[in-house]
Image (tube, rainbow, N blue to C red):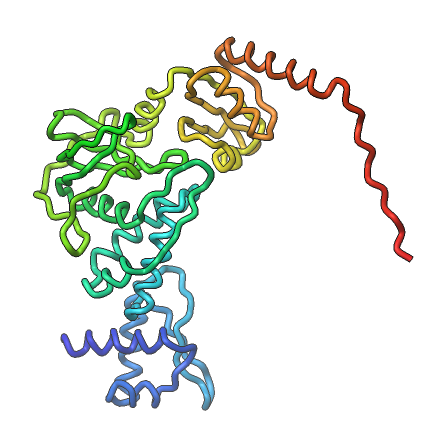
Length: 334
């Protein structure tokens, strides 16, 4: 049975390596008969691998695209390339891709041999962080994600907002990409309380192979049950001024353009969304909102309405003496 399983994996690897193989070619590579090749192909089909057979004398076997995604086999170089790409995507802050890339990266790095993990760590990968958001080391993201999945206690060095450095023992529960930053929801064993930690400010203490080694813990229930809502409430608490506006633009567009992570964007319909923003004051909120390049209406509070009136008056004074710019004229090309 083991010999048959190993042969099936080898056959699958060959089918993935080039567009088409003839039966005799596969039989020679595998050291079996063409009849056994046909039987092994049937077994792969039974495992949902869409192996197709061309008709005629020149027909051969090829791996097609099916309705389901079966497992793939990667050689060393391919595994390194995929892991590096996932690390880059996980740390990029691109909306909608970071969480998925991180989940795939955690799965992949769990089974990578140590020699490949060292190659990935040594590769010079640069991440361009969007606007003002600090970049996150993808290796740290992967290690923290693995600790969340495996329920292992993490010992971390953490730098607080005021610059104070502390060492903590935490039970990591859930990673959340909020705005343009990554946050970790964790139970702090030293403080006996829940904490929301910015991943770009923490450094986990790991084994030489880059994996967490702390003892396992029984997972606790996050207050409210929703990690994203928990992070939203904690992050918003940092800024004292709160406002709610309706923006006449799709939610995805607003998430991609708003330059703060102190925000929740809720879709109203395909063309509008509701933005709940936390800022230092009404002036800061007005500056953020006017940068959206979209129409919006203030739902609360009145203080923001007053600030926007002051901004509108200042803008009006700025253009009151300006002459309209004439449209550019085109010169016919002879």
